[in-house]
Structure formats: C-alpha cells, structure tokens
Image (cartoon, rainbow, N blue to C red; front, side):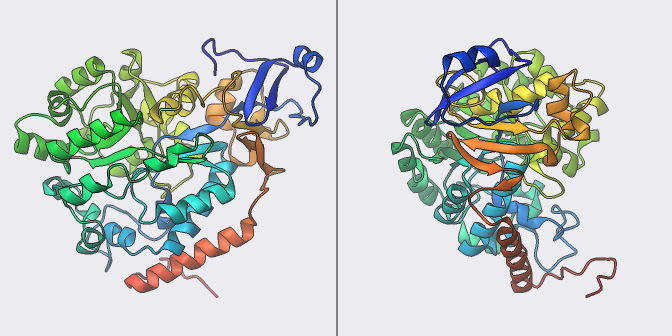
Length: 451
C-alpha cells in the first residue's frame, strides 16, 4: 500500500522495535538483515493492518438484542436506552470482545466516535488486547431538533447521562487529548462532535479550533438520512455541509462521517474544501434509504475525494464484512468500486482520517509495524492470481494467522496472545444478559430456545 502500490510476490518485512526497517524482496532483505526472529508466512498475504475509521465499539453488544435498532415501538427500551444503560464493566467487556474480533478480521486500529461513557475502562481493554485506537469525549451536542428524523437515537435516559448542553460540550472538547503526550500510546485522543445538526455554530467552530490547535482531526456525522438533511435545511436556510463551509469548519482538518444524503451544493463543498469522508456501508444498508438517497461514493473517489471505510456498529456482522458490503452497495447502483479502491479505503485512507497517515496504513520504512499475516492454506485464498481481490473480498476471519501491533505479536496461530478469548466471550455474553434484564428487554428468540 505504498505510493506505487507495489506487491512483492516473494517479499519480506524487516522490523526493528516498533517500526518497519525495510520492505522488499525476500532474497534482498535476508541478505541485508540478520534477524533475531523470523515469522514464516508460508506464501500467505502480508498486509498493513486494516483500520476501521468509524466504530461505536460498544455497540457490538447489540447483536441479537434488537431486530431493528431504528425501531421505537416494539421494545420497552430503544437503542438510545440501551446505550445509556451501560456500566463501566459493560463497556470493558464489549470493547475487549470487539477488539479480539477485529484482530481476527485483520484490523489493528479503530476510531471510536465519542460514544464511550468511560474511555478509561475502554482504553484499558484496548491496551490489554493490544490494538490501537482513537477516542473522543462523550456525545458533544447542544441542539436536538434533528433527532426528530432519528427517534431511536434519543431517549430521556441517554440525554440524562449526556446532556444536550453547550457548556458541557465546550468544557470537554479537549478531554482526551492528553493521551497524545505519549507518542507511543496505543490509545490516542481526537475531537468528535456528534453532528447531524446537533451542534450549534459556536460548538462547531470551537471544536474545529481545538482540533487545529492540537493537530488532530475533527470528525462529525452528517448526511445520515434524508429527513435529517431536510430538518437542517429548514432550520438554517442552507444544507449542512454548505453551512459548515460558511462557518469555516469544513476543510482538510475535517472528516465527515456517513454522507449518505448530500445535495449538489454539498458535493461541491466536499470537493472544494478538501475534507475527507468516512462511509459506513453496512449502516447504509440497515437504514433502508436506497430509494431515497443517491449513491455517490464511487463518483467521489473519481473526483479525488479521500474516502475511508467504517463499520459504524457491528450489529449484524463484523468489521471484516465492510469491504464486501461496500462492493455490494456499489454494484447495486451499477457504479462498482474496485478491490484496489476498497483496500485503499481500509488502509491508507483510514490512516489519513485518523490524522496518522505518516505513521500507519502501509508497509513502508519508518512506519509503525502494524502487520497482518494471512494463511495461504485456506480455500478462499485460491486461486491466488489476484491478491487485492483475495484480500478485499474473499479472505475472511479464519484466514488471519498472525497480527503485530507496534512490532509486538498480539495474535498468533489464530488466537490472542494477551487475553483468554473464552473468558472475553463469556464476560461479554453475561454483560449483555444483565443489561437486558435491567432494561426489561426479553432476549428470548422468536424460535424456541431449549435449555
């Protein structure tokens, strides 16, 4: 994934400490380096760790709880109540499970968009498993009108724990940035404002200024569903991204998440501003807005807009399904996105969205040694004539053999090297059952579950 997108058919990666010392042909590097330890990929693909550019990490705990997270009528608690009902122990359990799953899918980093009540509990779990992450303060917002378009994202219990308040949000903008004092920290901070019309001009401009002053990206949701865009336009007299451009908030420092429902003026603002976009294709599927929203991702790529991929929430799949979901969405609209573009969106582009393009996203000398080794001994690895196609669209969870983060082996032989996966799985399942009980949610399936 370097600038030339080179593939070495018989290659090697040399690592010293936490950094990549060299990448090249196997014979050349074997001659140049006297390795203290060698990991033999046995003909498998070796690639930079995937980066999930938008993952509400604790939402993995929603699997099987809601038939539809956007539903507001068939359960005693909605999705927002579920988020608000979390404890520190719940967040630690869900984060550990999600991190182990990411390793199994070939991911070495994710960006968490401000939905953790305890970043300390989550950070401890992330570091324990050995992943890398960006975290942000909890739900920064000070307006609620646009929630009328997304009622399942709002509840009294959630707003009690994360008040819609300007003073609170301003006071917490830089709350996670002290993590960046340690350049080797696995968990770092950035600025995330919830967006989708929930931020006043004052909050948005303060967030942008904070991000600039601290050299971190500013992320925000926008263009989630058409109804949200319509409410925003009615409130402000213009569309959201055009308004952000007028406020001086939309520029190369800004990363717009979702962008499912943008008008032509907003598309122009994206191109002119140099902002980035994170697309979450499984969320696009789950919203059911295909008939009410234009598909623009392939067109944006052709225009040179930097687009990366995010999971949003692993409700009905895993992060490893994201590239295939993006491919299927694009094909549905008869505007395909290539396997090569998908790999760029999941690696170098996602590293840029994290503000860490010089550190991550490719196997290059001087970058962090976040490396994944896939097995060539699985059926889906063959035929092996097209490595990008194999990696983006076919090689699933069972193909990951070894993962290194910062030069440390954190996954080997198909297992975590730092945590007992059975305990992680058990703790997450117990946590979900206990939270459902507290909220009065019946986890009984439609089909009878005996015993």
